[in-house]
Image 1 (tube, rainbow, N blue to C red):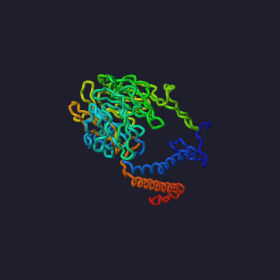
Image 2: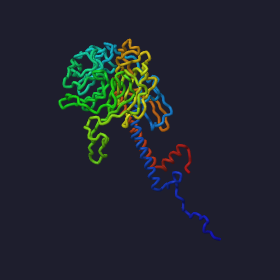
Image 3: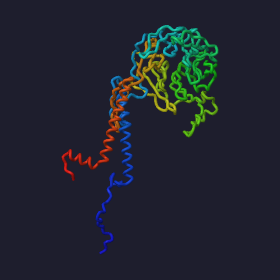
Image 4: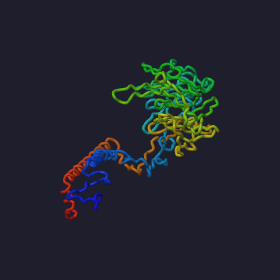
Length: 500
């Protein structure tokens, strides 16, 4: 009988190797040893690194994330968010409320707004006045408005900015003149922080009269964008006054013009790009929903050591001098509703639009916002009903600004244009994160949120206590592992079991 293919009996003492991990690895092989080494490394990192870190933030933070909460199925937000979606969208504001500060003197119509240090100035307005109002910016908001140093001449629809320790009031109109070329400069007093006088600067007179222009501070100067000329016609001009080594600004020089005329718009620098949004395109104040982006020429980043290669600027900038505009483009993210007289402002790289009047003359109460990316405005303008202006407190021609943790709307008129809306509206800029979240790979739990030096020291103690406890547990695990047989016998004795 042929027994070649018959199963052979195991020889005496020939025990098959033990397999682990669903039979994939030999229990005494290098593969299983490597897997165990990795697992123990992760355990050590978790116990001596991650858990003490979470213990610290559990003490000092309002919420603590445990694990990777990538997809939250349950979200619970604090009542302080006042009904906002949970979690609140990025850029969302807390609902608008009436400010606690006193009314702005002079009605707050047609003036310019600039913050210089700890003081906020409302300049001119009212169809053309020399009056200014000043309020102190504090942790609780604005103080009572008071009369400030008057401008040398009446002005309305001015452009204003604070740069390199000085406040600048550029252009503007009067009751009789639709645009001027003047520039006034104010320097805060070193003791009081207040601007005691506004001085005309003939060196900075504009090349041509402008009112309703947008003024934005960049790293090396001021850029004036658009505005209306002496005939009240919106312009495409862009001028720059560069900072000199003396600390003063040089005369205005032209930069690449806008692709379309623009007046009463806002401008902000986000990264290496200028964004111009809102306002009108023609003399008849036709609102536009087109957002313009101007790209500034940047320097090549020098290569150092053995690091990453030097960053290469956009080839389109060519030989354009650093800091000048080499391209204007119309962004694809159009404002959902064109409006005239909207409040326009920027904060933390986000552009905002609130209030104003639609093309049909109706008051608009919605608030929109969008955050530019490296590729520009690639998304859509966001809005939620909770961020609409109060129906009985809509604003036309108001100024928007962020002071501390609040967005503030100042001045303007009511929709009927029969009364001024000189009181302020405020909205918090930092809705709170959910206090509890439950996801597929982690969760968020409330923390103690102990602030200040006390919280920090208690956080250090919590982290040190967690580290010490986990270190002792690891030592105990090492002793048990080294004495596995004796530890197993001791455990069986405690459980009342007999040795096998």
